[in-house]
Image (tube, rainbow, N blue to C red; front, side, top):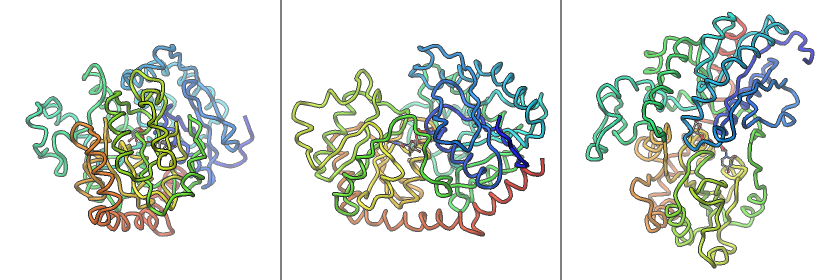
Length: 448
Ligand code: UDX
């Protein structure tokens, strides 16, 4: 173990999914920059590239996932497997780390590690939790018991548009829903996460309280622990090097050749998948919009295919110069490029906050979990995007892209997202809400 000098030590237990690794490592960098020494605990599955972070100490734990478990398309089952298989390895790891660093300040765990409460209590070390969703989605998740009790989570199609009385901005179809074979599995996850959050020493959010003041009040009422909204994380540290896939940097030189705000960037994040027909409808919709597009098609994201081999013959030639398809992009740089004018997104919270920070309005195609809540906020509360709510069809994609990129409707969204971008910029500056909250978080950790 490297010599830590007098720096207070934090153990950070990262969760091995892309949408979690990015904010986990951003938080680690933020705390490192404020004088902490960071030990990253990670699984062998989706293990991060430690050479990108020579300033951290890395400890790998054996997760014991079999190949079939590691590639389980049911992500909720995968989360449960990780939680059950990592109990003993995390126990051993913590015991060893604490024998070497008995004065470590605290452990920070990603909220999806819901099993960690008993162990950290056993070792008597404070446990803070990083929740990677925003407050609006968090409130919707935290009301899970009452939503289940009232039967809202198993409603018929006919009630999909009915409002949810307990969550004023949401309709039944916006409630967080999980892609899993067994609905009890989703409930088990929510129950585990809520219990572990309530017994934590505090919760850290990659969120901006000025944008979600009402939801912060609600969260404070339900969770009697200190809360720290210190986002947007990526605005405090340089672009992430925690990417599990290789980012195709040719995107940037391609964007350099496009007109300002002319390109629609399309990406459905690191987990969401689609079937072949949806993929083809999106392909034709983007092409027929006649707008330049940069499209991330993650290998394996089209069910039953490797990559884009099902595109009809001649399609790639037909988009020559107008469209570019890549496997993975440097998303933060793409969104901040002057040529990018819109984002067709699955509305994961990282993608959403990254888009807000660059004032790029969105077309929402949510899949599961918090993405539906985010899509509703983007399209109907903040009104900075359009929502693809019906079956995915090429004409609708084409019309939405045109509306967002070239109509006065799109222009209004662009105007409405500007003050949100400014808020995101101001809040991390000296005296801004996230800056104050970060100061409080640091003082709080040092008080343990
Ligand atoms: C999921 C949930 O949807 C999200 O809300 C939750 O907080 C984390 O898990 P994911 O599907 O990975 O996340 O989406 P998102 O939250 O948007 O995170 C994706 C990350 O990958 C972003 O930080 C984005 O910048 C990055 N990315 C995406 C790339 O670097 N390149 C790409 O081509 C696409």
